[in-house]
Length: 197
Image 1 (tube, rainbow, N blue to C red):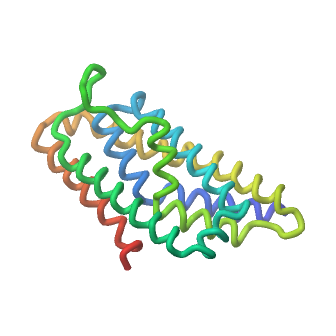
Image 2 (image 1 turned 30 degrees about the vertical axis):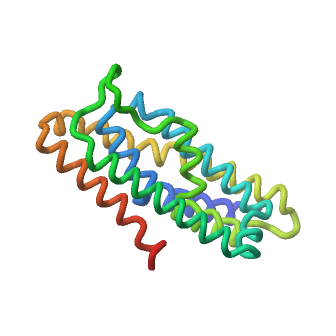
């Protein structure tokens, strides 16, 4: 991959990683409700889960979904339903999570698995592989794309959790916290619009 192509890929990775989407809204809410430290497994899960999705798409999963449209539709329905569940869970949260609290952020595995049903993640992964893979060196280019995304994605998504953590003191007022969580739930549900449209 040429240095120009690598730079373009990194810019694409940054823009798509830092822009609003389901995972970033969940990180913002988690950082605000549970703090940065408790949200780290979720941050890592997003990066690892998305990296595994990129590799799978690059090595042929995208072609499988094109060949079997019913599988693709099933994935969309499952992803949409889970996303609505998470939006409801965030929207109904009414207290800042403490270490001993029953409520908790998503785990590493839950976050990683969510990337496989995240509509934005699929669009970004398919586009990245279609644009940046090289037919002359498919293994090397797919791996380079996944590694580049991981290096750019991790600090980009961590920033959303950090911003949420900054809001913790402001959200210590139960009324503000309630409306923040309702807004985060609505925004998360609204990310389904491209899937529906």
